[in-house]
Length: 257
Image (tube, one colour):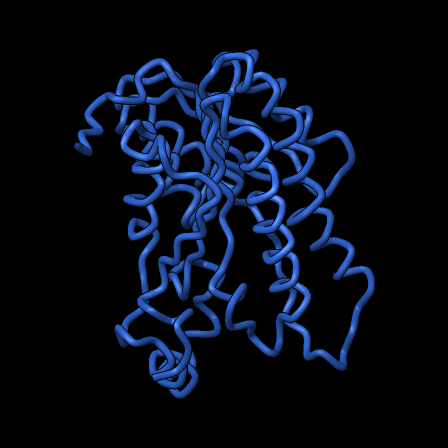
């Protein structure tokens, strides 16, 4: 039975990119379930501090972490700082990512390398560093945040979509290696969620209607739509689920209808 009231009490959770959008909704949901949480952003911000304070008001321990995941050593520094403030990381949610919109024929090497560093390399480094301690503890949860673009890549974001496919492949591979140790690794693949990242694009009414027409539910998601699956995977209700890729996209990944 899924009963999340304080089920994660005493667990330490780090959600990358959690000062706004999907990450903010996720870190607040984990705090509501009793987890001590680390709110991460590239640099200090009023939005991030507001999220941290909201989590702290729920009676859990909190901390703010800052750093650009595209920079060398930042993944390690974030894990070390979280462990120092809250204890060893029990729950790692790899939400932070970066995307550049470019048509396939307008290739920019530097942008592609930045996406690979943040979306793939940083995820690999954080997982490989946190998994051994989870194995030793006999319990751990890692959730990678992918994208509907794993299945239906946006023509203007081919490289971004490819990085999400790579991250999913890693999650499945690592899940196979640590399943016997009480550690699960799963991927959530959101569709079109109404966040800051999508505001500009969806402000164009014709584009908005076009994209809505590609979604079987004919609606866009909100960040909180991503929290139910996250909490299920991080709780004991999800203990027998690993290596899964769960779509949160109103059916968009099924193809056009």
